[in-house]
Length: 474
Image 1 (cartoon, rainbow, N blue to C red):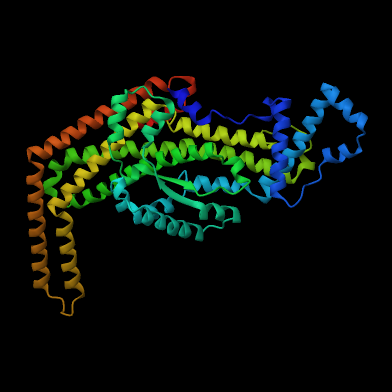
Image 2 (image 1 turned 120 degrees about the vertical axis):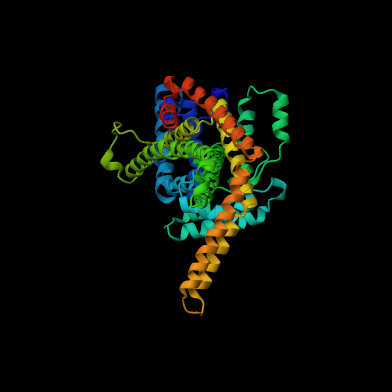
């Protein structure tokens, strides 16, 4: 299951230059020459072209008939074309800046962007997919993107990416998408029932580009963009769940001033705390123990490659440093970066993703039920009315009166006590206690399955990255 999903995503992996045959190099050289032609006005005279003009007919024939000379000629032409293309990518077209854009917005490294975006579209994304006003979401994405770019200096190439970015809504969630890609082991009956469920906006949303400018499209091919898109959906969903649980925590702070509710609130608070512990550690693991270290490694190599392109005479022909020296090496490094993220963010393991999705869905359902409960008990309404009365008394035209202050405090205590009694009565109902107990059982069951799967997988050498996640959640 694990290998099939990874092969579906990265079946056409870029090969490093050292693994390429002479035929592959000859074919790739032609592609790079054509790409260079589109990147610059006219063609750049190369060493191989100058050498070719000096060759006689007889020398050309001897080269073609001699396998060793032919191989050397192909190798020189390949490295000449690759050096020129790499210099364009790292210099004029600043591919590193484009990859930073992908990290900020597809891997949600830009925290203020995520918060501002959800502030405007959270209501829409909570609706079922057929009811989502997609134009409104797209307009807010454009606005949020513009705000995010104002405070950060951007290259012209990043601006092209920003103007081309748009949101779309897919008809499958991440779990079903990975199921189809990896030909999962679930029965067709269970698959059919999961497909019948109407997705909410936050489950279906994804980012895509209207078009990727050339030559960045050499690095950000459709296969790579699909990987970024799945990573975005995984991280977005997890952070969305985290946001809902944090909002619930904020609501629960209002109940802490009602001392008579402490004992009754304990099971609810405990379950919320366990859920928040799981989701915050899961998000931290993906962002700071998977994405960030691998990004630093990739960024360091690309910076070294950029320095190599600009100061080639200083580096000479030394091969000691480990950084991309050809375009194929660059593509291979980026592909390996995405493969590691895809694997270590659990997307190549359907069993783990299925259990993590069940846990996060349970958290969302719990948040929804508690939100309904808070609305039915009118806690916010009671406290808001108290706040308004306090403001009117403080900033009114009448002078302060000790008796009015005492009356206000007494009335406030009475309202809070009445609200507290109403909540306590609701807490003691059989339906509420059954709901909390059921959510606790389901969450505990899904978490135990997830931890069991982690425990069985992280001992393998290929899955050593799961050790940190297991230790944090344990």
